Image (cartoon, rainbow over the protein chains, first blue to last red):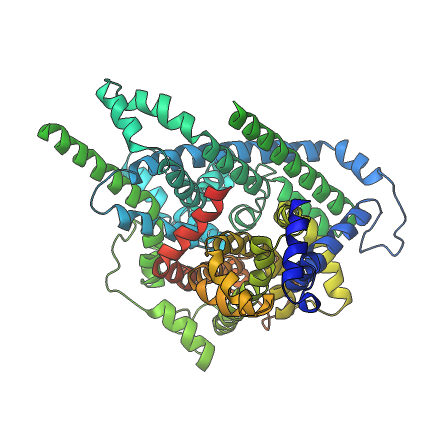
Length: 308
Length: 296
């Protein structure tokens, strides 16, 4: 009401005829951006929801309404639960690796020493590499016959013979997680570093004078104060990790067997290989709802933490 | 005390060295591999340092494209085709990334201005719903978009990819710019309004010129995001006229017939623009990435 009063006042004091209402003005200003978002997000989203309730296979001419049958088919299919589990294993491990490594890296970069600026700049290299090229890079490092990882591990005595890392069972998943984390740690590090820099130095110095060692200071001062930042990092990283696709496409194609078939990969296969757009859309909706659910849970958690 | 400082520095530099090996090592290994000959790459035991340094892989990509020559891989067929689609894809990625940066900064700035400056109902709803858009998984949108594009004859088309990339980039741009605009003192704007400028003139003559650093950050992030986009590029492109560098990199990486040195050189070329951008504009990028997070 106050805003309206102010607005009316300013309209009266200036030339009233040239003044467009602010709401309409805002709409005019943001029209091009909103139009693009509507065409590329809202309309497709609505159509994806429509598709998820139809039998829609490109190989068939008839596309009848199917109600919840696509969803039913998915939820009663073991393959779905397998890929959901794979997605969770991937997301939980990757987010854990990313957050822990990024936390320690940020602690390092928060120290005062010559060369810190260079390190921070170099950290942008893995971040700037496109996902696909990151996958290409790791595929080469892990090459079964000519990869440098095999050479290094053999030199270090960890393996006797060269290993086909990406086509054997547990190692394929482990390396996908490592390759994915490698690229995503830098951004998380920068975010955590920004959080660290808001913690007053005097607080840590006072604790040091009181005789608290580095571990105690981290545990009782840094970590609690960093909680909001860490929650934001966790939200973003989890949402991104659940959508993983690019790196799977190049590194493993969901294999060996189904061991790296995450939800994203199974949506891709169902839709664009099996041409079953109905089931693919329903799967994509499930992934979307899952993402939304996780975002809300994290958000509630963050909210509660801030109120405490 | 001095002793303690020394150990502190030793520990810090040891940690830094470890950091460099882990985070820069793999990238350097890729670059170093691209400077070898195919026969060095496939040597067991491994060749640690390229000797001699060779630009043959790059020559293959460039010469193959222009002169139909297979420089390195006489035994492998179609290498000139591969290098030709590679250079074209590089150009396509550049066109997409530059157009997306330009248009998303322009449209984003105009969309961010009212959120930062005007007082209207639903201002935060608008900002929030623009951000929620980013929560929708790309795969959910990919299915209808591919169908639409096919129906409208807009598949295999750079314009389609530019539009799609803008929808990913715009929410970030708007978020970043509205935060930046809020840091500009309102007095300047009020003075201009007193002098009879309307809102459009204020935005064009005061806010935008004063926001060059913010606009630059937004533009660079847009460039990096759209250069690296893969899923839609994979689904929309069909021929070499619209292949992007990520599509070709994935194609090479999954093709057993392409020799390693060409794959690797293609990978290195595809990271050169984003990595150079990132290092050159690191201050802008770091401030941009952080401004969104801290305000959150």
